Length: 259
Image (cartoon, rainbow, N blue to C red):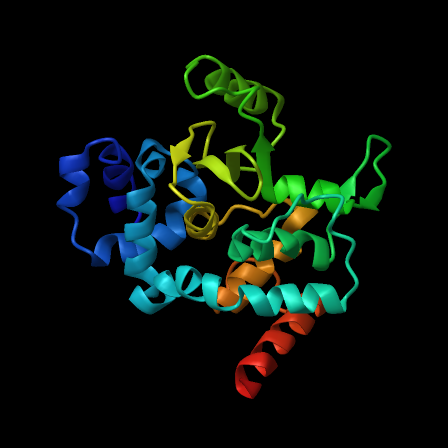
């Protein structure tokens, strides 16, 4: 196993050499060397992340988030309304807006936020705004216009240099509910994902394969995605499901049974 590790690392940047590996090799090695590889050049291509996740966890699990994302959106919104969450300060919604995008971004508001350490070294509960921002980073087009190629790299370089973000993270240009572009950002490199649901899907898979920590502010949100959508209970994250995740999951499962 250790004899293969240097070979795998050396051929990471060599697409032809890496593609010659049999499926069993990455299936056996990726869970063990992922934390050491972190965000190598290989994982700057989200198709490779998708490929490795499918090899390890299977087709059904790999497709589960996109499959369930649209079908449970209304149920998540129903649960949020039952919890009397004040979401209007965070969203400017119209009836025509995509409810699947709204439901996804309501998760950091309805699930408990995590503890973060302040400058004095004291652990404090993150605010809902902090949890929402840590889950999806929204940047307006007027700040990062697509026609100007220098602003986006500058923003990414600043975040990277100041270590402002737990990576990988989701970056959206434009409106929260009508994004113009969506990216997954590993190691300061923006990988365009096409849609917000796809960006969330790829961001989770990258974090899970490479065994990196979820952002503390929205840790419970990612735990819910892991355990409800992907049904992966062991390995990354808490082995014992958080109460907030358990409550929302029970509600959604009961809604399916009654429908």
